[in-house]
Length: 334
Image (cartoon, rainbow, N blue to C red; front, side, top):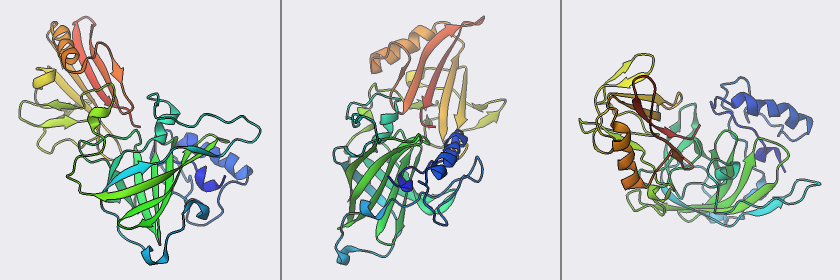
C-alpha cells in the first residue's frame, strides 16, 4: 500500500483537522510519499492536491493514443467492475468487499461513484483541477469533493466525503478513459479494495444511465415558490430570489405545490460553493401537519422522517407553545 492511497484529505471540510491528525501516524510508518508539491495539512483550511496513485495502477495504453495533456470537459458515463481485495490488513482476516446493497450513511457508501459525471469549470481553491458535477436528473453522489486532473497521459479522479472515497488513475482509450480505482479511508491500516473503472464520452442531454429517481427512499429535493422559482438542494439559490439575513438566511416569498403555503422559509448554504445545504419551512396553521404529511405519503410513501445516501427529510412535526409545524430538507453530503 502506498501513500497515494492513504493520503488523508481536508478540502475545506469542517472535520479536516481529524484527517490531518493521521499525518503523524503516516509519517511514522514511512507511508507518506516524499515528493515536493503533493500538498500538506498546513492548517485546518488547507486544500492539498491529491498525490498521484502508483504507476502500477495505470494499465498499458498504446503509445499512439497517449495525449500529452488536455483540458477536461463534457459528460461521461462511468462503469465499474467488481471490487476485489488487492491488499488485506496484515495479520487480520479478509473483510467483505463492498456490495451493491449498501447501507446509507455507512463508510462503504463512499465506494460508489455516480454513473454519470460532467467535467465543469476549475476547482475554486485550485484551478489546476477540474470540478466534477452530476448533471441535472442523474443520480447524485454521496461525495462532496469530486475533481479530476490530467497529467501527461493520465487522468486522476477523486471522489471523497472528506473521510473516505475513491481515487482512480485512468489512461486514454479512444474518446474515453480506462484504468483502476481504489477505495480509501482516513483510518489506517485498512483493507485495500480495487476495481476497474471506465469513462465513456456521452452527450450531456442524453438520458442518464441511472436517474435521481433511483434513490430509495425517494425524497423531494426542491421547493417551489409562488413566483415560479425553485430552491433545490446542492444547487445555488436562483438569482431572482430575494433574501433577508436575520440570524438565518430567510427567503422572501411563499411556497406552493407539494409543500403548500409556508409562514417562513430559511436556507443554509455550503460555505465553499454557496450551494443549498438545508431548506427549512415553517407553517402557522395547526392543520398543516396533517396536510403536508398526507401529501408526502401520497406522492412518496413517506410516513416518518427518512433519509437516503444524499438526502434527508424531517417529516412535519408539531410541538411547542405555538403548535408550529416545520419541515426540513437537507443534503447529507458534508
